[in-house]
Length: 361
Image 1 (cartoon, rainbow, N blue to C red):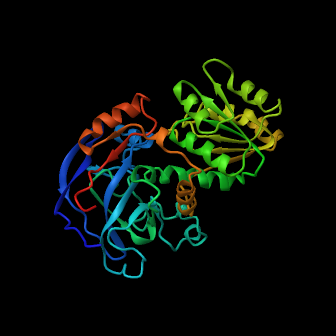
Image 2 (tube, helix red, strand yellow):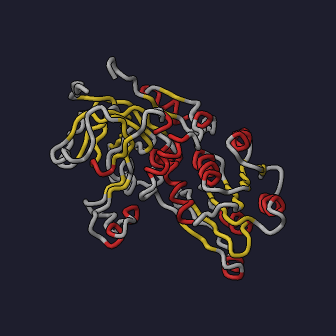
Image 3 (cartoon, one colour):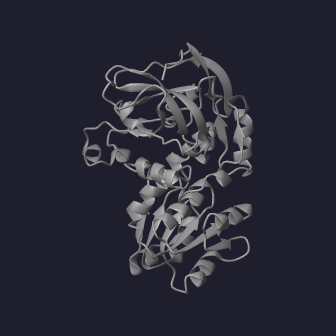
């Protein structure tokens, strides 16, 4: 494919001050050694982005302003930086990018757990869209090792969900989810609606989704065998009743609400596993210690998606994961403020910013 010219400037959603996200012209980033310049095709907006813009993690995410956020995206290779000749990538390849690039040398990185890099506060570690520039822009630079090819049967918009989907793959692996098991998913946002589908693909035969409103209808459509409206019934009692009175084998807390953790633990059977995927914006949770000890619960934190992107891409390509009901709200970059608004008001499961393809793309 003939390389298209890369402009000197691009549009980007720039966080200039907390609460102030505006689209501005900025220089196109240049790829350094081992890096690739990508043309962004689609970028999702998540609850963590809302918290970053609001300043919930100020001083850490981002470390300074102005800053470009955005970490759930798909794109295509626009230019290869020096030292990427043997990366297997070529201009025009469609790709998705991992968020974490660890230092590569600490014990966690060497064990393949680069999401837990021990040098998280040092220059060698980058969490794109959080501590390093994100992709809510027309172009983004990433290390070649963080990029994964996207097959043609996966659309640009669907590929933008790989980031969150890979997190649920990591959760299923970390929980050691077994075929024939029962599962409860708390929180039917994007993460929960992907989690239930990945649990189903992993062989779970009973999936109970806990939430409220129209998203429970979507959960049913995507394969949840039962749903619980927590505004109409006690969620713990309802989950346990649906699971025959004993609780479920696995609980995945995708809510980001610290009040849910105690409910998730009490919904699990004795010896069950509770995996927590959602961030709470610095808030604390009350932990019921007695059930944790007396029922020998496995309580797990799940961060990011080490080594899970290929599996999620394969699930999307196979048709095992449906994305269309999750990406109904799509906007051009100039309407990024509108997209943030619909997410904050829970009118969209995952707003997607789409970039116009130029002629010949």
